[in-house]
Length: 74
Image 1 (cartoon, rainbow, N blue to C red):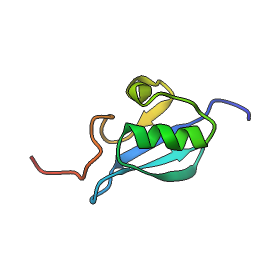
Image 2: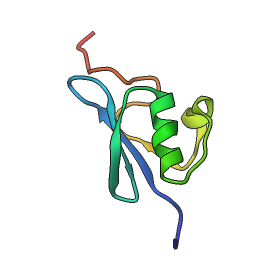
Image 3: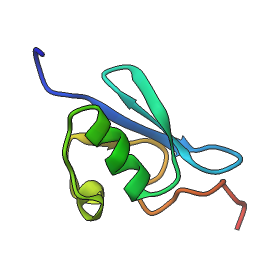
Image 4: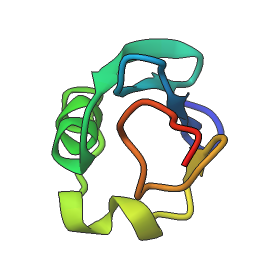
């Protein structure tokens, strides 16, 4: 594969969870760092769930890795 892998984690959906894309392909709806790490493992990218927040190649959209549930007005 040419160039770096592009991982995008979209903002939380209204019902919870975050859509995960790798190089434009939707991998699924992650509800926590463990889900994200599993999707990435299946795509051939090994990462420990504890390290997803610090991975420079993951683009967190909207909010950071601390939010997985539905957006609230609080």
